[in-house]
Length: 325
Image (tube, rainbow, N blue to C red):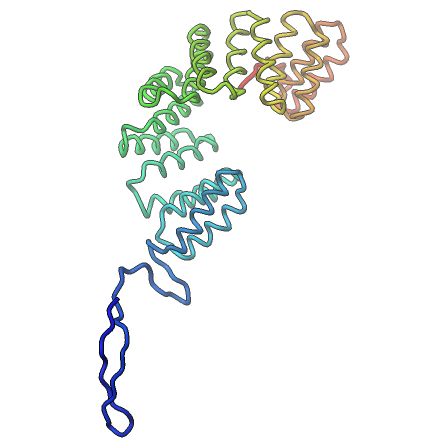
């Protein structure tokens, strides 16, 4: 910035000489509105945005929302601020608030495939699979190279019971990202749905290679071995799943069912007891325990569990205890 000579006069008209600095016109970073700096390039907004993302990364969603509220206040034209606040609301379990933010993000930046993917995930969470698929379709149109659109559309198709269409999309997701353990897990689940346990096990094997710390891979491979009536191998995988995630009732239900199939009913009941402690609203745990009690000849205990399961699932019918994930 250069200095320049500014000539003026005093109150009597006598000339005076002053040195001052040139006022340079900088690129517009924002506008001052009601005392608040706003604008797409606002460094203040970007700071709040980055802080919000960091809180999202560690699951502190209330803190993330607070920071992203500030980012939106400083820059209401920032699609990224709305997108990330939507992520925080989804993580917090507030899907309707998340949808509002994703809608705004898409309005501000309709070419962002990620916004459509994330909105589609919320529709999946709500069980609105057709709307989810529409969003994933659009994400794929915007970026056909991204595996996420295919992966999540496959999840929607699987949830709708359209397993073959799901498998086609899982294939495309894996083609685009062959190192994503989740894609192999989910394709393996689809093969499990079809009773193609050998193909499922191959996918779970690959997932374990890619991420040996993911309990879901062991849980679902255990389900596949269970489907093949290889109960000991299933129990080994359920053991590992429980070791990695001891708070997941589904793994205890799976292992308990395998013990029941091996006629080790006391061990089965112990696992179903733990599943009930972890999630007393899961009818599968009560059905599984009821089956074990009945096999032991303890009909009264069995009927008590069947009654509780009936109240939970809305009918008096028995329900197969199946480890779902």
